[in-house]
Length: 479
Image (cartoon, rainbow, N blue to C red; front, side):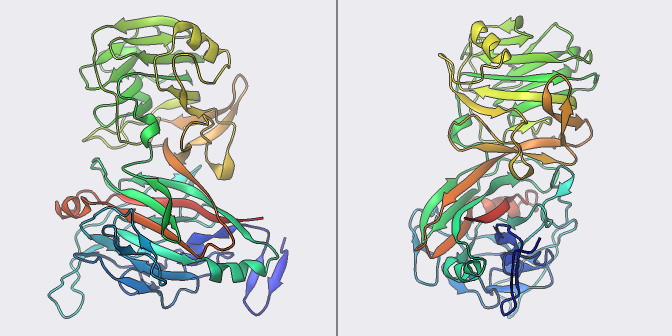
């Protein structure tokens, strides 16, 4: 239902929040924008034809936007003297970068994208195609970059500043005001080569960082070093090697079923691949099982339905990891979205210490909270689904909500209520940092920045990485 129409500004408001991706697409935040448009970082204007360029030595200049009504300008971040607005605001906490970037900022991942390199010695832009890739991003079968699930795609070493005052003039026509910025931030690879990524995402208000996430979506709250507990309810009949949940890129930890040579049982891994333990209880019999792994810095244990299934002493592994938390898929080089899970998963919980058997029984009975031996740092019950994503209900640190990819869905189960359903093809879920920033009436500029000091080296390595950040569901909420 249309609630308000302003004929002079062409504002048609139906009660929705303001969509920043719509603004990057050349519109006013309340319509659909154009998902094939992008913002050129060199010229500060809207492009109607997508071209992507790599620029060396691009830092040091703030470019005022010329054809985007609500964008103040664009820039290449590089160190603490980076200017982030037309009024001279400085991002004093900006890390040093190598100034290599891809431009423009698209609103959606393109199925086929051309990469180009800038030749600073030429009189004009010299374009040399490097490669092209597919970009499978979706929520509950809905691709990001759609009207329902908008996103702003940002490669490392770029910055974009919105003019909040100009946006407020439009919002006032609705009779409301801006109260906060919300959304989800994540890093994803764009090809079949999995690498460690070093990019950071920063949200600034008038040059001051209100959100900064370095390295990846997991953040410090999952950096547990030498003790942890991970558990879930699962229901499966698969005979394929399948990942239940993981926080690993070779080190870290993961939980799977049907490891080669150990069919029908669980396998837990901490630290390096040599630190694995295999269970004995059959768990792919088509009924619900509670599975858990605990590690106290020396002993790794597996529990099935609250009963100790297997253990090994003298492990001594460091489980700290800077890679995203995943459910239903494994990513360890050279694998990419490997060992997908087929079946149902519910109540995925991670604690930053080794729970006791009594505490495990408590969680099985629904007592999901901090325990005497550990804090709960990640919790997915698949019941809370704000804007179509699975909420992290742990209450610990920055929430890491789950994004559902490639057809992964939430279904109703007679025994457990809402659960995650995976078909074992290429669907999975990945954690993304939740952004929720209060905005005041006198805040003038809102800035999005992606930084990566190693991006140029990795990109020049035969173009093998192509990692990018995406800011999904980027809304200015109205009261």
